[in-house]
Length: 346
Image 1 (tube, rainbow, N blue to C red):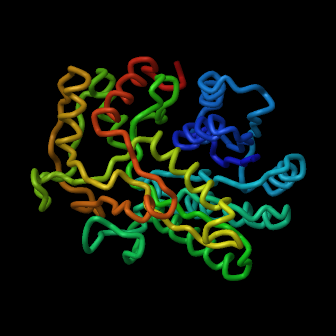
Image 2 (image 1 turned 30 degrees about the horizontal axis):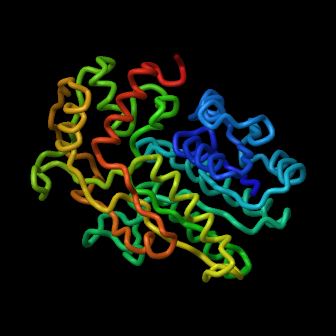
């Protein structure tokens, strides 16, 4: 199939492009490169040894209706994997309108152009942040939703927009994949998370402390009601996450399943267990042989004690389960860090 991947040069998007190409699909990427690098797509080609016909790149924004119309007109696209959007929780509280403009308005333009081109299959990159502070863990897909920041609300809004669109266009096939905490890198060390400036996410921050690029890690909160007082999260290897998209795509196109004539698939993509911040630090120290200097500081507003997925529905519905453990996540992150000290800016 021909798959349009919005935000395909980004961290999760580029890893998913690898899995799509390895599965025999053709890939069309649209990315405005505001928080990604075209170098990642050159690395995708290197890893998969694909030819120029198997992956195309358009340096455009999904909000650019003319560009999208052109892409759909000139490519016989079967489905869309939608990753494009801004992604920092903290930044979203500072520039919320930018997040709603990029993440929500951009998706509306994309859906309208898909409808115009008669492409009715989309898998959306959603987030576990839409669960807010969960009443219980592990979190099931039918848990109450209550986003606590503009980033999370933008994800929840898009889910609701897609659900409303399906109510009007019931032949559409829609996948809502709720990610927990993606970490790790491709085992080759060629692809990984390449933050601009100081990392927002914990794993690249830890790896840069280990590499001597940053002095220390601030651990926000040491008095949570968890086994060691630090926050517990569900960390999932980015390659497992990418493969989850292939499984979801296969499920939506399987003529024998419940989505034959359209439907909405909503699944959690996580490892199904939680690790504390201190456990993550200890694992990275073991893998890297480096001491991770950290300081426990005050909690951040809006942070929660514990969050991890119930993954049984994903296993049942799309036949997917994460396979790579915390040690492998740390090993692959460290390999990426050592080969790419400045990310794609090397």
